[in-house]
Image (tube, rainbow, N blue to C red; front, side):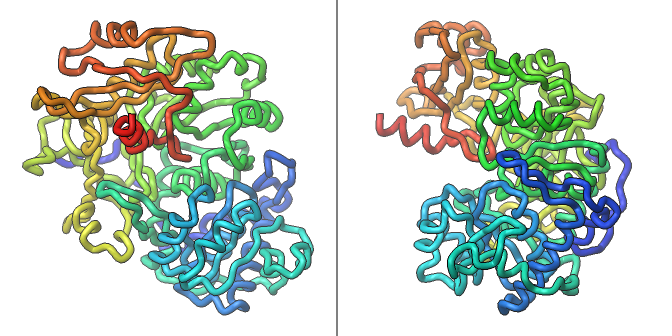
Length: 524
């Protein structure tokens, strides 16, 4: 059974990404496109468009040919968009690297992507240079602010040098040409380059804006990293296409996050669940004026219905979810304003089809039953770079993307994601979703954050174990936590062990790093 989006289809033009994203730039002129939240530095729409085309010219002058790959290693800043779209105009491919990677992790991405140029923010230069050894990288540029003189780095090649070139026009590219190459573990483990085309990216921007109704008069906060597909597309590219103002933050700090909301009158905040936890529970939130907020949009990891309701009641705005993957550019589902259903990740975005499939038989399950979520639409990736086997596992001959997530769809088309298929805990033949227990643990008054994994057990195969972070000033024992859960779940879902931590390890996008917890469990 194919479930189609309840939203009307949108037109998806066959055009290069940069021109589509910056289509409003000339008309918006001096309006702030991007603001550096830390310094207040502004890049207007007019200045952004000019800088993008100058970078494209500078890259061409440096011998960067259409199809070449540039690696960008930087935290969120206004120049991220300049470099990203400069590469797009030059007809190249950009691979965005997590700046907190080790040189070994960066090296893998540089080798696999075949990057020939790098642009790197100063704090990460030593690591990036070490990573580039033995790769195809032939030149590394220092990321400098737009407006800095070309000689600011004392002879080191910089972004400012690229900006001295005359503006270049868009290099002709096919809509099916690869533009972005973010890396993802996907459903098959190991970091793989996800080939996203101009058409994939343009399509998902059109889909998201068609469903979200993001407006030109809005101010967005960009604390989720641009190197990750969520920040790259939903924040940076959708925001610029809409003509909104985007305030960047290089990293999450709760006080700075709240101050930035108050100073700039942020209207829509895109976050991951750990930030929602802070907004719902931290006492300092009450000290700031967040009255401009109309919506908090949570993605990248599951958000419990109770937490969404708690944060929404405290902040007097909608707290909704979306769903997606790097392999889907990234959004397949979101919650339009007024469509909130507790626990749902929303409805399929326009032009998107969904199936819920038995992961063993690959047959569609009955209405309302749990199964693996399969997605088909114009936002689905071209495939994994240099990895046809992983591509074949994830993307079938019918262009259905097998997400590896377990979910169900209600009669109104709302998707409820139960958990990752590969993270299900198998207890005596029963499947236990960690996300279900995590959501329950977060309802305990003493619990600020929680994660659940499966640990080996001779009798049952696996049993659930919890890692818990307590709220400041709160106290609870292992036995109290176990009894709290036991009174609300079937016997096989009961927590068998509780470990108290200062923080749950998570990725920059807010996903629980269960592998680290499993490693810590083995070491313990």
